[in-house]
Amino acid sequence: MNAERIEVRAGSPGEAGSAVWIGRGLLESAASLLFSPSGRFLLISAPAARAAADVLRGALAGRLILDLTIDDREEAKTLDGVARIADAALAAGLRRDDALVAVGGGVTTDVAGFAAAVLLRGVAWNAVPSTTAAMADAAVGGKTGVNHPLGKNLLGAFHPPRAILVDPAALATLPERDYRSGLVEGFKAAWIADAPLAERAERALSLLLAREEEALLDLVAGAVRVKAGIVSSDPKEEGRRRLLNFGHTLGHAFEAAGGYRDLRHGEAVAWGIAAALEISRDRAGLSNEEAARVREVLARLGPFPQPRRDPALLAPYLARDKKATASGRAGILLEAIGRARVEEAIPEEAWLAAAARGQI
Ligand SMILES: NC(=O)c1ccc[n+]([C@@H]2O[C@H](COP(=O)([O-])OP(=O)(O)OC[C@H]3O[C@@H](n4cnc5c(N)ncnc54)[C@H](O)[C@@H]3O)[C@@H](O)[C@H]2O)c1
Ligand SMILES: [Zn+2]
Image (cartoon, rainbow, N blue to C red; front, side):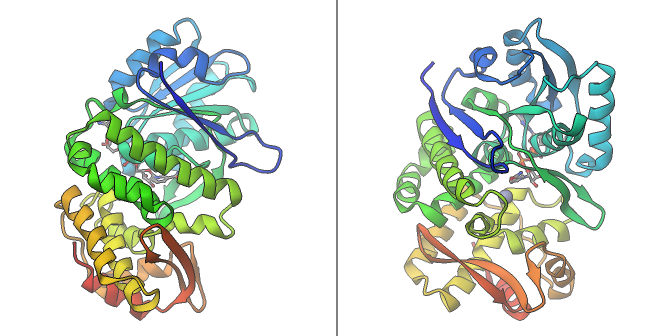
């Protein structure tokens, strides 16, 4: 095992942070890397992440008090989904010193993490992401939660996993569309805060698309380092952490406008980034040349299905954005590759115009 360890301080003051382990062959060593005060685990896995879950079943043999497979469709990312995990965990005799292990994509880690946050007022949990999106983003940083009929991720808690295992073996069965769209989140982290990483990943794009593990681990580890740095300085998203929402204001609107079916999360974010590039050129001095470089990467990760851009459709979703205030919506603008800033009040017209213009 040749692993890198990155620390994330993402909870309340005094609360333990997360250790992110990144490397090949980590799943086999899960027993020594995953955290549980009692030594007992409850495995919560997505059906499609079976290969990774099977390795963990072997590695944690004799220590599992529950082995639950959940419905991990975005439509099932609800309080009901949390209740199902709670029912099974309590029936299995969960104690406060036991720990959950979530194996799957961002839906699974968000739901299982939220269940861990509320079960017995909080038990420890671990994440084993099995999508590129969850490795580069969703499993890291402590945000957990579920959707509400009125909007995405409206119910949740900050409850960081104690250990996160990023092993490329967990991606073996991931479909091409999920693999590629998840990389958008990895590039997002590079674009907002790490120009050398963006350049390296750009040069390695063909290798990344061919699933070459070295290139993938470099991008994922870089993205985790960016997120760890930002989140550790602002765990509750009162300032700098908002930079991670680059592409997400319109991204979430595109995703919602497609009924959460037409576009993958990463695809919606790609379109949201394309629109944010337009606003960034107008208001943050982003050069045409750098905007074109970002668009070229997105084009090679795609082609992505076109989003619905009608202003009348998007406006209500923008209005419900968690980052909305009376004067407009805060937006994340790129000044240059590797440097982003928050602009507090971008008027709705500017968002809707950019949504109509952004091309990949
Ligand atoms: N908490 C956070 O900070 C955060 C950040 C970003 C995104 N998210 C959330 O994460 C979710 C998106 O994450 P995602 O893209 O990982 O989505 P996902 O969990 O829906 O996974 C994508 C698809 O891949 C399948 N899958 C997962 N692992 C697989 C494997 N190894 N082989 C084959 N198929 C596999 C899933 O069943 C699903 O169909 C959204 O709900 C989003 O809100 C959370
Ligand atoms: Zn995202």
